[in-house]
Amino acid sequence: DAGVIQSPRHEVTEMGQEVTLRCKPISGHDYLFWYRQTMMRGLELLIYFNNNVPIDDSGMPEDRFSAKMPNASFSTLKIQPSEPRDSAVYFCASSLWYRAQETQYFGPGTRLLVL
Amino acid sequence: AQTVTQSQPEMSVQEAETVTLSCTYDTSESDYYLFWYKQPPSRQMILVIRQEAYKQQNATENRFSVNFQKAAKSFSLKISDSQLGDAAMYFCAYRTSGTYKYIFGTGTRLKVLA
Image (cartoon, rainbow over all chains, first blue to last red; front, side):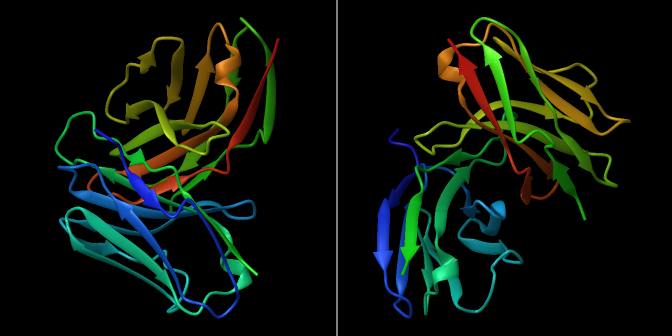
């Protein structure tokens, strides 16, 4: 398996622009997570999905952030409009719930820089 | 609300020696899971070891083992025979059973000295 795939790996944009981050989970996994990592706040869970349905979005910082999972193999995290304080590494992770050894598998992350 | 605390921002260990990374957590739940993740310079998060709170036996994975003290809410990671490839950020994480809301600590940077 190719693992969790994220794109782009790096994104540089200007304040006010729309940013879309993409994630392809591991095939067969039914949970998908979006995290944000910064020096100041560490690794924060933004939102997670189960079977394409958002379960908990309490970590989404504000209305500028939105996430979708239109099908089991694709999810997006969108920031509109972007701000410099959104600069961070964004991770996507997936997992399979019923396995006794359930664990999250993380993607390589997208490093976002908003100028 | 649950919290995870890693009080050691940075640790160093000599190659082949043993090092212990500390983690404490706060929760009112009785059924939960604890994890240690490794993040090398590549930024990829890699699961090192997991522990179910209902299990009294400490989890072990090769050179990695934990000391799980449920009453003290402590979950430390011991790395034996440290190798240069162990150098990374290590994150302690918590998840309440029945939810998938993971809470991560702030991390400990481990340096391995040759």
